[in-house]
Image: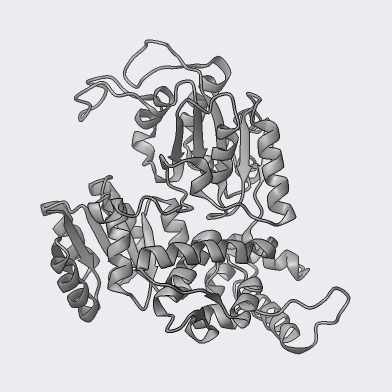
Length: 455
C-alpha cells in the first residue's frame, strides 16, 4: 500500500483528504506543521507528500528543499492559492511534481496522485494525449497540440530546419511554454530519432549529486555508491540529451560538460577511465544566461558551445491565437479525465482567456480549464465559474491607434502607479519591489519595459 503524507494546518482539509484517500486504497498520515511533517518523513518515508504552500513555520520553497534532502525520490504536490501560482511554478522547476489551487477537489488531487505514483488508475488514462513537460514514451504527434499563431509556426520552422544538423541548440522561454516539446520536435526530425531522448531538469538535481547523475559513478566513489551507475550521457548514447534549466548547473559541472561537448568523452565520478560518448545536446533556460555570464555564474565558453543555434519560445500572452487552440485541447483532456461532456466555452470566457496574461503559460491554462470542466453545470463554461484572479486581471485589447481610455486605460494606469509606488518604497531595489508586488523579478522587468518606466 502506497503511503501519502498530508501537511496542512487546515484540519478540515486534512480530514477531508485523509478519509477520501484512505477510501481509495492509500495509507495516509497527517501533520499540521512543517516540523511535524519532516519528523514523519524521517521516521517513515512516504511515496508522496501533499503539502500546503503556506505553513505556520515554513514556506513551500523551504519545505521542498527539506523534503528532497531527506529523500530525493519523494513526489511533492503543493496546495496553493491563486495568488501563489507563479511561485508554485518555480517550485515545479525546482523538483515539485505538481500544484493544485484552492478550493481543492479530492477527485482532482486523486488523479494527480495516481499520475505521480504511476498507479493503475493513471495507467487507464495513458491513451489521453497529455501535453506534459515530463518524459513520455507516447508517440510525438499525440503528446502535444500545435499552436496556430505565426510566432509558434516560426519556432517550429526553425526546429525542423536545425533538426537534421548536429548543431547544439539553446531554447529560451518562460517556465511552462513548452520548451521540451520543441526539443522533442528537433529530436523527432533528426537523424537520431530512433535513439534515446533523455530529458533532465537541471534545476531539480541537488548540486552534490549532479556529477553522478550526468556522468555516472563507480562503486565506492562515495559512501552510498554501492554499485556502478551510468549517467545521463551514457543513457542517451547515440541520441539527444535535453538539459532543461541549464543555468542551474554548478561551475564544476559546467567544466565537465564543456569537455564532454568539445571532446565527446566523459569520466565517471571516482574513475579515471575515459568513455567516448555520441550525444547531441539541446539545452533550455528560462533566464538570460548573458546576465549569468556577467555575474560569473555561467561560463561564456560553454554558453557559445550550447548556443550554436538559438530558439526563443514566446510566452502564451504573446500569441493569443494559440490560447483557444490549447484551451480546446485541455477541455477534451478534462472531459476524458473527469468523465464529463462539456462542449465548449461561452464567448465571454474566450475573450477573457485571450486577454489574460497567462504568466504560468500552458500549465496555468491547463489547470484553469480542467477546474472549469469540473465545476461547469451546463454544456458551456461560463465566466462566473472562473477564478476571480483570472477575471480581474484580464482586459480587452484596444485596436492599434486608439487611446487608453476606459477600463484598460484605468488598468494600465493602476499598474504603473502600483509599480512606481513599490519602487519608491523599496528605494528602487527591484527584487524588493517585486516582493511587495507579489510577482517575480522577470515579470516586474517586463512591466517596467512595457510601460517605459524610468528607473
